[in-house]
Length: 96
Image (cartoon, rainbow, N blue to C red; front, side, top):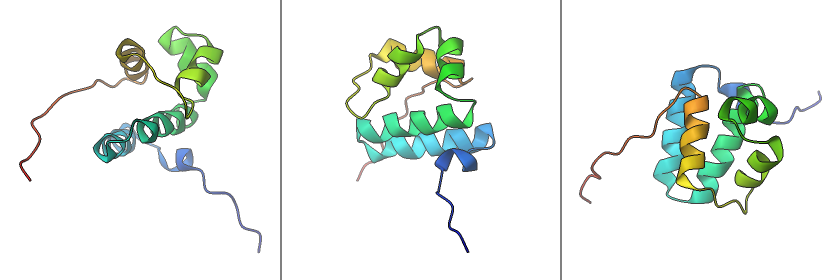
């Protein structure tokens, strides 16, 4: 039996799945985790080229932005989320 590679994007079928996945990435607190999650969501939604076009950025710029060493501006993140039909919200952190 041949094993197939695990691809997170294969499991991000609905907006509900995507929202839960991105929220979990945000809760991790590491920016690199969020960038990787956004890359996976881009793949699930048709690829980087499709997301770049929807967000109004070049594909190369999107690859750089979401790379492991990326350091995107908040306006770029907001445009990516808008292109994905999502928005960023803030809520009060629960006391520890």
